Amino acid sequence: MYEVEHLQLCDAERVKRIEVMLEGLQLDNDTLERIRQVFRSEMDLALKMQPSSLQMENTYIPELPDGTESGTYLAMDLGGTNLRMLLLTLEQGQAVNEIVQHYPLPEHLRIGDGDALFDYLAQCVDSFAREQQLDEEHVYSMGFTFSFPMRQSSLDSGILVTWTKSFNCPSVVGQDAVKLLRKFLKKHQRHNVEIVAILNDTTGTLMHGAIMDRNTRIGIVLGTGSNGCYMERSSRVLHWEQQRHGERHVIVDVEWGAFGDNGVLDFIKTDYDRQVDEGSLLKNSFTFEKYISGKYLGELCRCILARLHAANLFLPHLASEDFPQPWTFGSDNVSVIEQGTLDDSWTSVETIVREKFNASHYDTDDLKIIRHVCGLISKRAAQLVALNTSVLLNGMAPEEGQNITIAIDGSVYKHHTRLRQWIIEYTALWTRDKTTKYLLATDGSGKGAAVVAAIAEKLRRRNS
Ligand code: BGC
Image 1: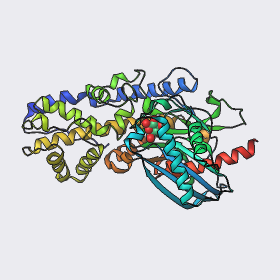
Image 2: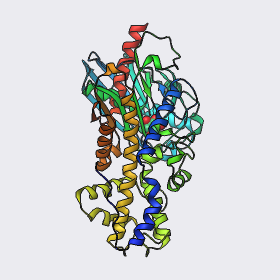
Image 3: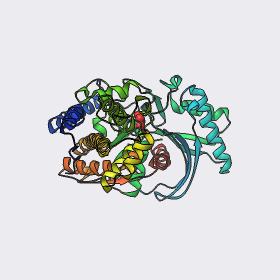
Image 4: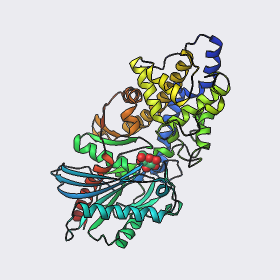
């Protein structure tokens, strides 16, 4: 198994002191086993509707595309730093035409008044409909990807539980995002767009993956935020507010970002993790996401290095005021440094030390330290993601077969090669009786929404 190299510096005493400070970032086998058990038990509790830090939300999507989906569908994708509208034409379950339009989503809309945000979303739908010259006489079904934890009572309702990532419009919490969007679509007199489904980006990713590979049963996003969803036996899902129609399966949105918010994972929390949480937009929540996702890995790295710096163990000549300010050291730096480790090249880490840390006096040992820290936090993140995924895989119904594909998307997975390799290796290690494959389902959150809209139409026809 691929490991983080031991830290070797000129001064053995320095190594010893650093190792003591970084000890908590390494997960030994017993700890990994404990996390595995806690995750499984939190999943089971939530499925039985008992208190848990996981939501295990019923998405009311009981099936994957089967190749019969045809028609033109709209999709809106909200959850990252920009907003997307899509017009997707499906023929026999395959996307044959796709128009994508990006819209800016400035901070004053992401943080502030909820009505202003939803008014803007409706405006974007309206202007997209005009630009694409949608037929005013035809009603287009739209899938709405809303990548935040929500409570669903049907396929087309989603009550926001909490904002995450870089969003915070408090008035929307507790409200149905579909109703809000419908209200503003009406205000803008956009009557030929009907929201038939609301979904999470992981569900979109799973759907998009299922079109590419029929063995897909899990969808994961590892980007700014992180989460996973999977095909569960419907008999295990107690929260079901609609009439059942003999569904055998249903997609469950785990919402693993919040894993540990109730304290069950405190045994792995380090002081650095506490510091990241302290400085975050949403304190005391999204514990697990803060260990693994792109919004936090860079800040975690900075916090660790800041402590080493304060202890005179890293860039000792650098003045404290020159040290990067909180939340200015992006996770992309971690990916770049890790790429340097893979390529055995020091160029990128050196550039980062010079440019991001404004350091003119540094030596190879400083470079080795920053590399080592990036290695440790990346490996921990990869192990945690692989561990959750392996629990989902090992709990799959036997009829799902031994070959399971995991559709995945997100900037961290795409750009952090070493972390990706670790995820793949650890998943294989922990699911020995299965053959697993990770499939990159780029932009699944948008495309998958159009597929879900097609499935929603199919279900309406069948169940009416
Ligand atoms: C949200 C999830 C989402 C994930 C990835 C998390 O912060 O709670 O709903 O799937 O980010 O975008």
